[in-house]
Image (cartoon, rainbow, N blue to C red; front, side):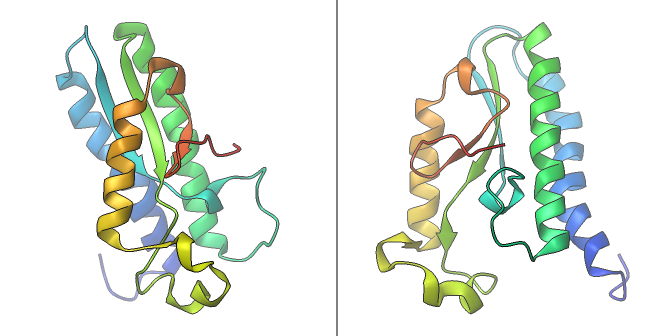
Length: 146
């Protein structure tokens, strides 16, 4: 992609189109019976119902698109593989360059290292059931408001 591409285009390609392409190639390879999990990194800011502050327009829109994609994918996948779980995962606030400008307002016990965030998400994945499919699930196991 050219480096002068609009930010919204880059954000949408990274957050929504990329996972869709991965799903297109990976989901047909999953077993039709037994437990499978297809998980993508989403974010609470992609929730339309939980948006109280606005801002981050292209990032929010791209994550909302990803969340809708996960919901559609879950519905379609359940027809051929009922035990397959398709979810978005919200890792919480992770100590990265992206979150640095906003970390002042994050309680200390809610700012996670990348390793801690990954560990928490692996525990969430282990606890998922088919009833979770189509949802975005946060680092603490709670479902994010759509």
